[in-house]
Image (cartoon, one colour):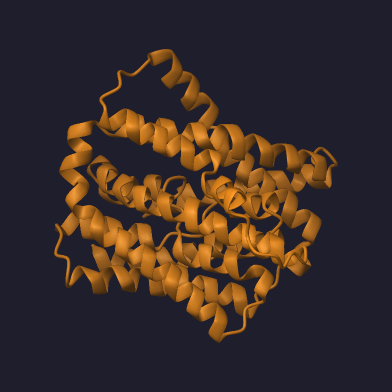
Amino acid sequence: MLSAYLNILIFFVLIFIGYILTAKKWFNSVVADSFSKLILTITLPIGMFVTITSSFSKAEFLSLFSGILLPFCSILLAFIVGIIVAKIFNVAPQRRGAFSAMYGASNTIFMGLPISMAIFGPKAVPYVLLYYICNTLFFWTIGIYMLAKDGQIKEGITHKVDFKKTIKQLFSPALIGFLIGLICVLIDFPKIVFIEKLGKQLSNLTTPLSMFFIGIIIYQTGISNLKMNKDTFLVLIGRFVISPLLVVSLSKFMPISGLMLKVFIVQSAMPVQNSMAILAHGYGADEKFAATSLTYSVLAYLFVIPILLYYIL
């Protein structure tokens, strides 16, 4: 449990560093834009590719594939529930996409992987990546589309979505990196050591830059303005209550091994995607709402994880 707490604390320290450096005028909105572009177009897509190619062989992927139905269905249902909840509780139209994306998708790699390894050990990695595949496909297709719609509503654009533009939005650089990596795994494409090492170095930049970006947004927004509101509270309920309950409920109809189920429960109850604030900024959505929800979700996780551990161990 201590290791899990320390892993979460690292994120807070990085956010705090970003906040302090912004206060000292080292970082500003121009730097934030540069971080956003660097992450979305380079480090995150490369990270997607490296993660899938370095963690799976074709045989391992195919042997685990039978367990993919449960996370696929649970994440899909979480997105649907998020859309319904947003309408029932009158979430502002310009943030409903971000709301549903945060409701349905979790932080599976940057927080989920190290925390699952701290709890279960290395044997949890294949199951984490199985959940990650489903989470990635939904987040970088449906989630990105919803964020793009938020940006259009925020800018007052009411015309119908252009088909070509929609396809371009769906096939984001991160999703393309993931799909290329998956294809390489399935065709047994030989690994090139130099490219793999270079890719890992670049992908390692994603988490600190993302946390710095959140620190910049928090400073520019003002800590006093990062107040708990109805929409953020509902996001936390979705992340930490609805999402894991969906996994547990579906497991009654889709029996899977004990460890796999425990890992899926832990993954489903992770905080908001750490790149949400950057993506909201990049697509013109409500980045302050995304940053606030992300910050509160990481903070709340300090209290959620003991309950999870009590339930699954």
